[in-house]
Amino acid sequence: MGNDLSDIKIRKEYAIYAITRHGIKIAETLQNFLPGCDLYVSSRFIDEAPDHAIEMGLPMGPTLKRTFFEYSCHIHIISIGAVVRMIKDLLKDKKTDPAVLCVDDMARFSICVLSGHAGRGNAYAEKIAFVLGAIPVVTTASDVAGTLTVDILGRDLGWKLDDEDKNVTRGCAAVVNSLKTAFIHEAGEPDFWPLDKGLPECVDYFTKIEDVNPEKYEILLIATDRIITDDYPAHDVCSVVYRPKSLILGIGCDKDTPFEIIENGLHHHFKKNKLSIKSIRAAASIDLKKEEKGIQMLCEKYGWEFYTYPAEVLDAVQGIENPSETVKKYTGSRTVAEGACLHHARAEKLLITKQSYKEDHDVHNMTLAVARIPFGSRMNEKNKKRVGKLKGKSHAGN
View (cartoon, rainbow, N blue to C red):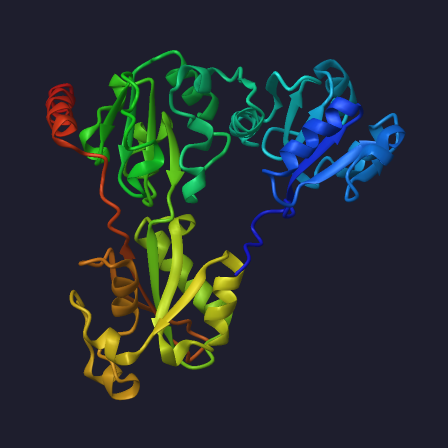
């Protein structure tokens, strides 16, 4: 199901621009490795270009004005100076600008010009260099240093920054300058940073926020599905918070429960339990609710997949805390919300046990439960010893 939380339209991936004979040859090589890319060729050499090439007038300004936000990556086989002058008035901000690369006319260099991080320009530059046998040119400090990319950490796994403006620049500066940094990994996949690649020396790794003394660190990088603002204000003020997709929402309701009541119940209980809705990966229920309109609308609004399971599957789930014979009488299972989230998350225990919600003016009732996906941590024996020492130091300083 689609996610309407973003106003950025879906883009095609690659556009290649060539204005010389050499450039066309280089572009043809790239096309063999970049399926579905579009090739724009100047009118002067369009007769020498592949049949599928798109004719482009010179100067290129009108073409780029139309195409700039239609692609994720623009590959210009043109000089950097010319490209910079052509795109300067098209730039908006690093959150939405596409990646822009330049390749010289002899294919010796693949240069990231724009959106190295947010637009994946650095990764694109590496890929294009590999295809052409060229040298990638990347100038982003964190990538050159091989350290954490604070602003996009975990993005390929679906992680989101809780606040894109809060402490992100400070966090980037901290890791680039090798200042003391704590990574607190409460939830989410362990391979947010390659598992075969140790965390930078300046980064200490923890799995519980309680084990960290924030006064000892320049910045805290916290991957969590919890709302920490009230309980850990000293941690919150110096943190960059990531929201992994770590929660499975188990949901049930009376037949034809209005969407508004289901959504209100969701927000009520997540606020009460200090969990972030941004960390929900999917919703799950019993097969009887497969066509329940209110639940479908909720999942459509937030971009969640909706999974349902047979009554006999849910009835056999271990770890149920609120079994109900009444529920079993009507559904065939002693559990709906609890069993569904536990089963889909492959979890052994609930994060939120079954909770009900109804509104005074309405007879309909909804229930929910939440399980956290047990991703595991990056811990190995070496890290365990190191973290144990750090925990002792942290407690000693409190």
